[in-house]
Image (cartoon, rainbow, N blue to C red; front, side):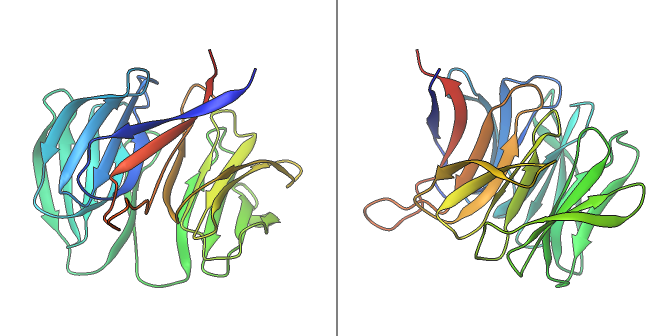
Length: 239
């Protein structure tokens, strides 16, 4: 059947990044410039938890076991939240620019990217075969993890790639930028299978860990040119 997208509202500033709970596929966490981190029920569209942190949040990622959330802000401060209590348990300030944050699949190591190498975002295929890199030259490159060779590039975007994500099966990759659409391509053929139109540049796209649902957030403005503080989820079937 036809699919639709739903809109979730509540933040007072832009939603800069979002991530699904790896253990509860109906829950999604958002990081916003309004200094809050919020947990949402994707089915009801309601915010169930909220934590106010010290700065404008731009990065968020779950630990693979779902017990902790890491949040980075514009002041290069990292905060770890206990998901059960939804309260900060650790903070660390870095003396250099932090761009992206992630745990490895076992949760034993924590990665952060820094500097200006022209690689803006990275995503790992959940099947463990590939990783993808989004770059300043508008290309998404697909790399074989075992061979460390680039096997394919995706060329549909015209602006620097801001965000990429693999679907839960690893068959599709979503990418977005300042182009007014999200491209969804087949990983194995490189061909576009769908494009989601957008009203603004995108900050974050994230596939659900269990279903073909894609959450996305961008620089949407209201009629007063203020950040709307919304994000959307694409893929729900029309009733």
